[in-house]
Length: 201
Image (cartoon, rainbow, N blue to C red):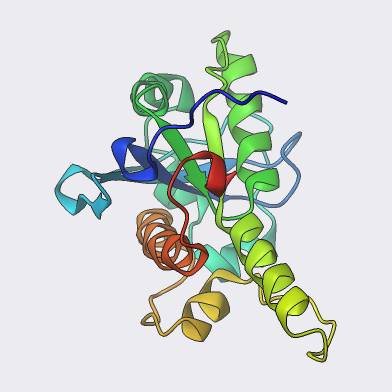
């Protein structure tokens, strides 16, 4: 089988993105905050970070248990810009390179719904998920050392960072979690010795 050459991993821009939401159901729950930070030339560019609270759409819910996590309540987000005004900023960044997420299932579902509701075309960015990388590293270790316990890797962002010697940050802040994901990605990339984008997907 013939494969086209894959670009070197550090020749691309990655936008690490995190969302804070009013729950886990992308069909009904509110999107409350977004944070994004780029990795260019293999380096996190904090000076280019971007974040915003989001005014929930009418009818979107905020589950009480989610408030305990992110501390965002209606009084804080009701004066924020609506998502339709923020999507062009998100879209511009997504079209620059690779979308970097921790647990793509949740964030992608909310993003795609937002694009549909705004009547915008989903840009179909290439996606790298740090959860996938954690699973791949665990599978590699089990192949090399089959006597190890056959347990799932730690997938929680804070706990995974701790296992790899990264500092603990305040969780459930969109921009902080985007930075945390970017840092974890750089460590996992090195552990995998990934040289190209194909090695990361």
